[in-house]
Length: 267
Image 1 (spheres, rainbow, N blue to C red):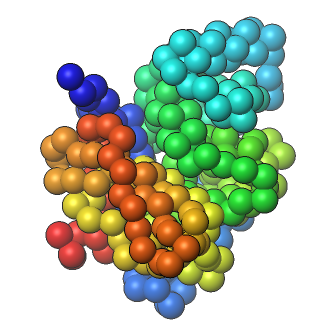
Image 2 (cartoon, rainbow, N blue to C red; image 1 turned 30 degrees about the vertical axis):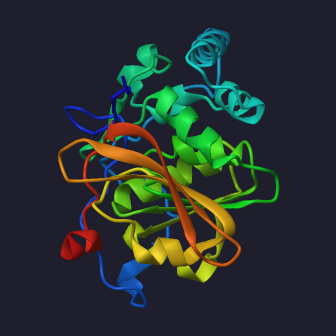
């Protein structure tokens, strides 16, 4: 019997949701890089804590050992999950459970995905040094940090300006300078920086956004949940052949919250 991995995002959540749309590609409103500090009055995760402590290191190693028991095998993913301090990407009140395998709210109606989901989707990408990766849905920046622990060119799009600013500031403080973040609708990808060798999408739509397929490099792969809104979807890995055609391989039945924005006009 197939496993049903519940990956939706608020009440059922593990995956990251995409918020409302912005203007079409080409206008300044469509996307801009986020480099400013967190907005006054927000409560970004990890602002007041020391970068790492032995207790957190021990919990992180225990988390990763559990992920290995659950089937995570790629050495580079295991190393990245051991490296990235997840407790600095969650709200201060949640640090005690930062290394448990479930999602946590990060504000703005969003969550940080469960560690297993982050590790599994990263492993599916089969990342190698020198690759260029696009993430759709930055959230707190944790997934981007895991990607950046493996490869040195990470581009991430987040539609909520406050989250984009906070994630950019947080990743900068933690030394993940190879991550670039822009505010915009991830449906459109990041055309100026394409093509990308890999893509990771953290919200579901009933179809794969054509701009993402166009920006996927020949030989590249994308992991994305596809299916009806508020229902069971299929986590797919999409591989682009050298001739520009695509192979879609189903991985797991999942349940992510729906992607919003431009994608809604096409559903």
